[in-house]
Length: 129
Image 1 (tube, rainbow, N blue to C red):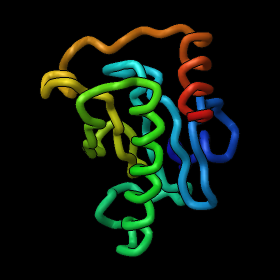
Image 2 (tube, rainbow, N blue to C red):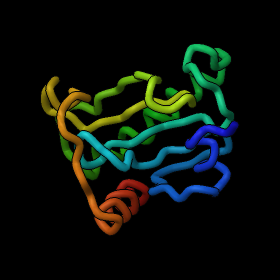
Image 3 (cartoon, rainbow, N blue to C red):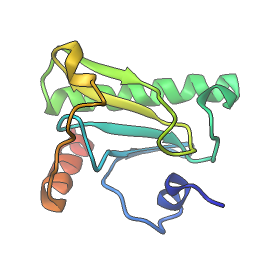
């Protein structure tokens, strides 16, 4: 059965895309910790990030680096935090989160509730950066 993220890649479920390549897709987390919280995924369905072939994993990190620079342009911050948890959706993904302090990446905190229009504006701003 296709994962939620595979359905996003296939266009069966909409997303707020911020960047895309032949191999990877970056889109906004719909329940972000902070504005500008982006997920980077391989378009190929792989459950566990460390099951991704080495060269592809390297390319995925370079893609994430490009996206992180765009995020930081739109959301000035101390750093773009990077985390891989991998329990939420059975499809490898990297969280990119604008942070100013360690607690900004605390996944136990309440998530932001942003409207479709707010998410669309954030996605457009990052995409154009």
